[in-house]
Length: 267
Image (cartoon, rainbow, N blue to C red; front, side, top):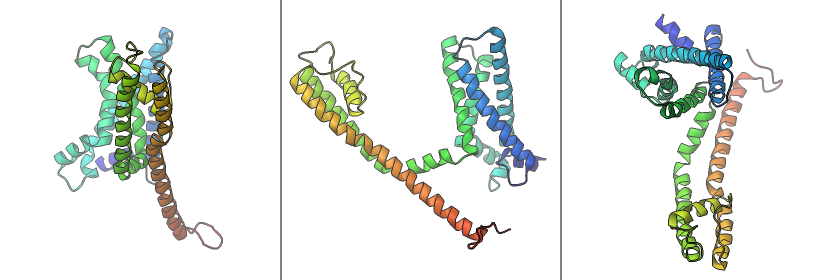
């Protein structure tokens, strides 16, 4: 029985109809959970509110049972470990932590007294259920792979941007504080200006009025166009590399499964 439960809760293998149906149900419940979270921000009548509360309760019960089943069958997922170690290994894995955090906000009020503000804050954790999609798609894992492989380059580029922001915040404070002491009160005010300027957002709530400040702002804005785009370029290059790698793997797989002359699938 445990083996069959393990086969069902894991990604469906070809021909396993029950496991495929289970995957579809979980994906549907994840989407429903997102709708419920969005609905909680909208004022609706009592009947509608009760309906969505019932939906949320149902999804939490299913996710809780799924979480329990995965813990129960963890020794099959990690056969090289003892049952106890296998379950601990699963519980502290990334996806298991997401599963737990996604259902905890529902149970907290039953065990821990808390005010409405804290409860609303905890309910935001329900959005973590979206990350359960990672079991059914490799999109998030691709992002993780790109960030891991390009981590050093990203950190280096972000460090350069942060240094420039600090320098810009101090210099703009030096230029503008004598003329706008209530606006540029300290270097932290300049930091907010530096972020808005370097990212070319320009909210307009804080801006220079001196000639030196305006010239300096123009220089920082031009630098921001290039420097802030560097991390984006690094990530884009990583994605292209991953796509090309997968494409090469698919072509290699296709050469084995498809006729090179007619293109028909070889059975």
